[in-house]
Length: 168
Length: 335
Image (cartoon, rainbow over all chains, first blue to last red):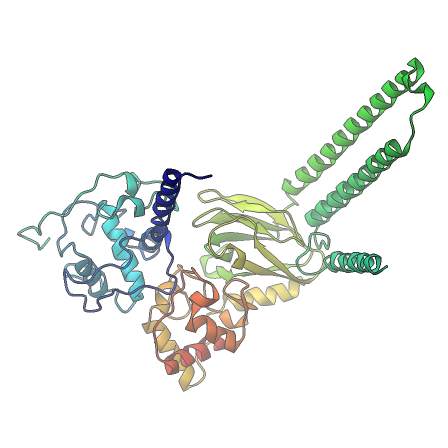
């Protein structure tokens, strides 16, 4: 016979395991933001808590040659993405906007080139580079030879306020 | 009586099912090339030897169960005979195992040794979840990428260089050769040589993610003349649109996310993220052996790729029905 206490522990363990289901939930049909307005500070990235979406974002980041300018987060021709400085805003909607519509000084607009859910996946991965997403959704492996510390063992770097001279 | 008849019926069905699996475009025991023939021979040898041993063991066991004890069972003479029998069985078992190991080693060695100077070399690149067969020749303008469809000339050794862009896959055409893993960051070589024309099916033989089961390809074995004609055609740029609808399809394709991932040689689409579509209309299947390449299937695939192959990187690109119809007409033109 299972005692009442054991039953309680069992229920808690099952509940704890169920909590992990969302982490890998794969929404192949694509997620769009609950709030379509994409107002800064209002829109939430639908993949922010989803390890699969972040992982897809990581693949797309290489496939769409984001690496060409931003390297693997350390920056090059474009700004670094793994630090705490976010020139054009660090909230979900601003990152979406940066990818979709481009920014001055070189960032091209991808809005008509890739689908909306792909932009959200890329945005989620970009946010994960500085360790801003929950620890359990950060990627740990790369498709190629490892070039830096895996995202899930980097020190989280919360965004600083936008720098004064945001024109670099 | 009814039970016995049911047993016979069951046996007949099983035998029919087993014999039906003995030939076809995707079968180990229907070899169409040297290595596959060696593998099939080894398989038959193992099967035969194991069957004989199994029957012998069962027969001896049955005899031991049926036999009655006799007066002589405890005698010294019986003990000696028993020892001799055990020693003989041990020696026979050891020799069988050594023999089978040797046969296996010889076959395995034969599979990895070169077949001689290769007539052509094909780079096999694994992707989640499709295959890219790249034919390289001396000059870059002779480069051909034939996704999910490998053409090889009959009776000529073909060198296969395998590599992967993401995770470990495994290249396997049961009728032609053994499995060869595609390891990221490493190029491995194998050879195939088909001696019977036909279309054979290959697949990924190493679990590689969600759509591992829908990562198949066709191998077309054809005469060297036909192969030459095929590859010469593949080297050409894409056909021009023939009418107004196809022209519109091309414009929609080039202005939409389609062109971000796919190549159509002769246009501005030149990305290597997804399969090359320069001659997509000429291929047998869509989505890596998942659907036959017909107009309705193409419409299904473009309209909702995630219901055909959940998890594929190909997204449903939002566009009007008229635009999608035009894109389909254009892609069908790319023979």
